[in-house]
Image 1 (cartoon, rainbow, N blue to C red):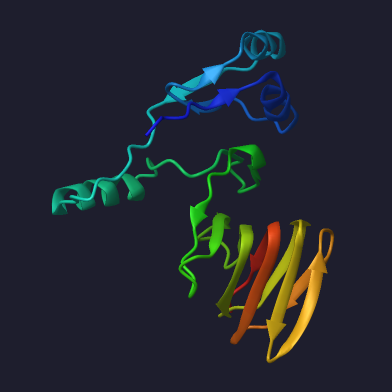
Image 2: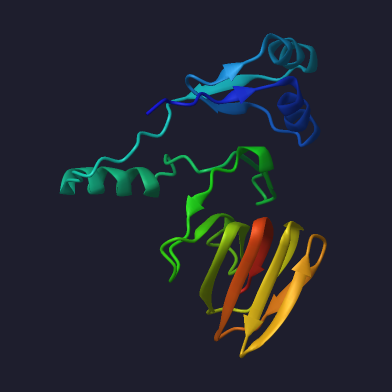
Length: 196
């Protein structure tokens, strides 16, 4: 398997500057273009490198779990995205840095991925992104959810009634229902839930 390196460009540096991210935290081994480095210097920003997250092996020991829990409790585990967080709790997530995880569905052939970017202890709100590629699957909506279709088209079926949503549409899904999602091509949504 070929390891893909991350790349930071001048456009990324401009984004960090606009969103007031400083220092910019990147994994060791990330490539920063010369133009990006010039822009870092010009804008008075700093880059701090951190160790990359290691891929989990199949042999997980009790000691490894204890060590991971300690790191988690001490806030040392890196996220699957980059974010700037103020001491007051304001959070700006770099959308270009999000690493999606596979979402388990009732269809083993479904290509569905997600990443929750808001899941704070201080609020019941949860929010994130969902991508669906040429797939059909049922999903149990446990908490009321609002989704914004960022790109693509989505078919949603609830109680035998099918609705269509396209890029720019907003969808509300009431809690305690099963919804069938269907996507032809790639669809990306942003969702938010607020459990009670």
